[in-house]
Image (tube, rainbow, N blue to C red; front, side):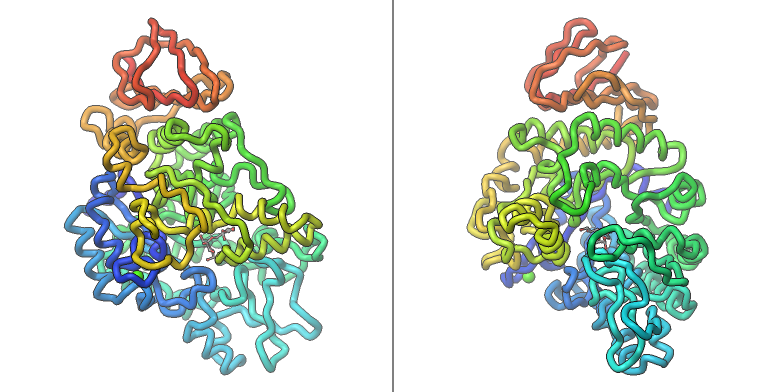
Length: 554
Ligand code: TEU
Ligand code: CA
C-alpha cells in the first residue's frame, strides 16, 4: 500500500449508538452500519471513523473502555465487526477506530486488579498517589470536580482527567505502553486502516502533582493548565508510532488542541507522529469565559480569520483534517449560522467552505443532510455527563434554571448524538422502537429519504461537493493545490483560491445581505453554485444572501 494512501480522501464520522439500529432495540449497531455502506459510498466517502464500539459501561458513551479486544454486545459481535471491515473493503472504504488510551474504564480488568491490590503491579498501570489530608492537588477534571478519587481502604488517590469512571493510564510504565501497542497492532492486523486518537495530549503529566492557582470559585484549576509543566509527550508518541502505526502504514488523526508551532511539526510534519490532526480552531470559536453560559456566537469574520490562520500556519507543515462538528460539539449549522438565517442555502454555503478548503474533510453523521441542534426542554432529557456537569456549573454561577437549560441546550454534546434521521417516520427510520436518546420534538423534515428524492437537497449538494473533490479535471487542485486567501477585506465574504494545475476560486457571501465583489481575473467557468443563477458581468460578481460559487479562472 502506498505510503500516503489516505491523502485526498473524504472521511465520515459515525457515532455507532446513533447511526442505524438493525435489530430493533433502539440502539445503533455494527450491522446497522454495514447496511448503510452503500449510502456512504454514494456520498463519496473513503474513510469511516467509528467512535468507540468497544466493551464499555457507557458512563462517557464508550469513551470508557472496559475491554479493548471486545465489541460491546449492544453493538453486536466481533463477527459483525469483521463483516463490517470486509464489506467496507469491498467498497474501497477504510475503517478507522477510536483509540482511547489516555484512560480506560474503571471496569477494565487492570483497574479492578489495581483496586484489589493497591500496592501491587496493576496499581502502577494507573496513577495511584499517596496523600494524607485530602486530594493530592487542586486540579479540576474535564467533567467537573477534582481529578482525584480515593482508592478505598488506602491513603491513596487515583487520577482521572475525565470522569471518575475513566482512570488515567500510566504511560510512564513501559509495561502499560507495551500492552497498548500490542492491542493497537492486534486491531491493525485485523484490517482496520488506522485510528482517530482521543484526548492524546493528556497522556503527559506533571509528576510533581503541584497545585496551581485556582481559575474559579471552586478553588480548582482546569487540569489542562497542568500540562504546561508536564513531562514531554514526544518520546511516548515516537515510540507509539514506530511500534505500531509505521508498521502498518496506518492513517492516524490526532485530537489535539492548542498545539505550539513546534508541536505542529512534531505531530504532522514530514516525519510527524500522526498523519493529520483536526483543525479545532474553527469548532471552538466563541467558547470563552467561565462556562457554556458565557459562550458567544462566532461571526463570519471570525470564521474567515480562523480558516485563513489555520492554513497559513499548517499548510507548509502537513495536512489538517477539517470539521464543522463532531460528537463533542453542537451541530455546525446551528453553531456557525445565525438562527434567523438557517436554511438550505446557508447550510450549503457552510458545506462549500469546509469541503473545498485545503485538507482532509471529515463529515459527521447527519451533517450531510443539514441536521440542526435538537430541542430539549428539560434537563432530564440529557444523557451526556459533560452537559449535566455544565448545567450545575451554570447554576452555581448564579443563573436561573431556565437560563441554565438554555445555555446547555445550545452547546450540549447531545445535539449531535441523537439518531441519524433516515426518514420522517416515528423513530426517524433509525429504529422501530424508541431510540436510547431522542428529542421530544425532532425536526423530521430533515431526513435522508426526502433528500434523496429532491435534486436540490443538501445531501445532493454534499454529493456534488465530494464528487468535485475527486473530479478528474479539477479534483487534483482541490485535493492538493495551495490555499490562498481571497477578498479578505470584504466583510462577511469568505473566499479563497485553490491553486494547482488549475486555478479555482471559492466565494461565499456569508450574510443575509447581497454583496458585489470585483474579481481580479476573468472567469472561465462556473463549477458549482448553491443558487440556480449567477450574476456575473465581466469581473463584477453580485452574490445573493449566503450564495456560494466555485469558479475556474482563465
Ligand atoms: O474528548 C476530549 C476533550 O477534550 C473533550 O472532552 C472536550 O473537552 C469535551 O467534549 C467538552 O465537552 C475526547 C472525546 O472526543 C470525548 O467524547 C470524550 O468524552 C473524552 O475524550 C474522554 O474520552
Ligand atoms: Ca441495535
